Each structure stands twice: as structure tokens, then as C-alpha cells.
Length: 321
Image (cartoon, rainbow, N blue to C red; front, side, top):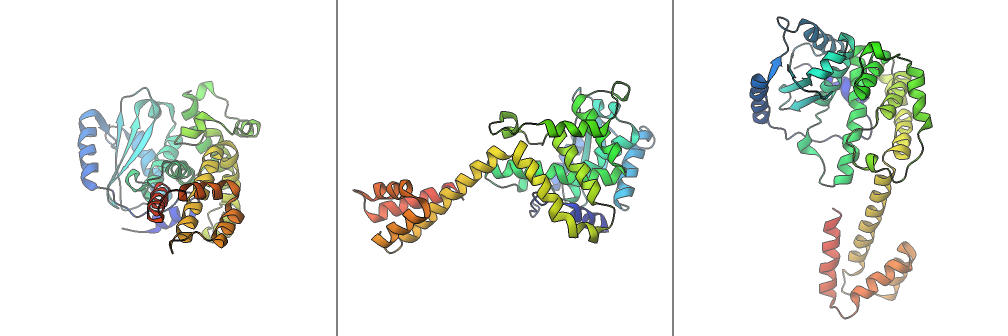
């Protein structure tokens, strides 16, 4: 299979979208394909020519010329689309009837391109980290990458943002005035929220943040991959700052505390390796982690043999790895 579309996807991958090796199962995809055959409608030029054209346009714009995936439309009031991964050449796209009904053909190409982005970047649910907080951050970052690929698939920033405005609102074209600059400006009015319950649990960034990220991407990406790669770090830092301020702030702070705790237990394990906790070791802990953490370790050592303390330290290390 031609690798050019995969190479393009890797070029625009957002830096927070960490790359993992695949362990996805083709058998699982085949079972889902069979379910959709029973409960949905297979997209085809014979029965759904407009939807099929949107799919074909997205594939062509991304340079996927040797593969046409199975895409299904299923009946649902929810505005939703998904991509289910198997091996490198086996995946399924599903779209709800409500989503398809809302979108014009070029807007649907953005949605399909977004889902194709999950395929091209191997965004399997099975290969995420065990750490729930880090997993949540990666899931959100994946949406930024997929949006970039969706925009390339539909060929227009305006089309991509129209599709996102419809997705978040559920409103058809006749009820929306597509003032993209005004819509994007609403992101500037977002207040920094250190205790945002929605942001703390949502697997997708807000549409406002995604729109702002996509506008910035469009300003940096003109089709020249080498020029984009030279500026990509600057772009991704801007997006990371938005994430940290409006979405991931509470998670970042929790992860920083978690990493600091892990660093402390690693340091404690090294200090206790020779079976002693010397005055020099105590001074190091105090200097590196403060009086509170030194007292915490000294309390562990009181009335306990060193081997037992080592076991406690080891258990705490396993909590953070």
C-alpha cells in the first residue's frame, strides 16, 4: 500500500499525540462490519451517491488511492462519527444519520477526513497508556491531529469550521450564519478555569479550542511539508498553551504532582539501597524535596526494619509507573 498518506499524516501529527505500536485486531473489525451490515446502510455510489462522493473526495485529497474503506450510516439522533481500526488496510467508518443529514458534501468530507486521520495515525483505543490522566491528554491531542487531516481532506478551513459549528450545535445551514472569525473570537472570552469538571473528564477538546487550533494550523500549513516541519514546534506550543489554560490545566497539575511523588520514591529507593539512611542522605532529601517529605520518610523508618521500608517504597513506586 502506498505510504504517502501515512507520511502526510505523520507530518501534521500534533506533538501531544503520542505515537504507539499497533495491537488492534482485524477480527474485532470484522465482527463490527457484520453488525453494521445488519443495523446500518453501507455507503455506495448506487444507493448513497452524495455520501460516497464525499468519501471519495476525502480519500483523493489525502492521497489514499488504493483503498476504499467500508463506511456505514446508522439511524441515530446523536451527531456522531467513529473509526474502528483493524490492521493497516482494514478499518470501518460509521456515521449517524443525524450527522449526515446536517452536512453538505464538502463538510462531510471534513468529517470523513477526520475519521481517516484516526486510521492514518493508528489511533487505536487498545494502545493507550495505563495512566488514566495521561490517556485523557493523549485522546484530546488525537482530535487536534485528526482535525488537521480532516481540513486537508475537505480542502478548506472554512468548510472544516462550518462542519464543527454544525456538530456542536446540531443546527442546519439555514439557521447558522457562518461568521468564522466571530465564532473563533469566542475562544478569547474563555476564562481560565482551574477546576473545570467538564474539562477534567471530556475526551474531546471543546469545539472552540479545536477551531482556534485549526485556524492556527491553516496559517502555518500551505501544503509544503518541509516548510511546515520547520515551524511546527512553534505552532504546537501555541496549542499546548491553550490546552493548559482552558482544558488540561487541572490534569497537568495532577501529573506534575504525580511525577514529583514518583521522583521522591525513586530517590528514597536509591538512598535505602545500602540499608542505611545517612545524615548525608537526609540532607539530600531535605534539599531536593523539603522538610515535609524528609519527615515522611523518617516516620516510615521509625520502628520498622529497612527491608520493610524498602517494600513500602517499592509499592509506592509501582503506583506511579
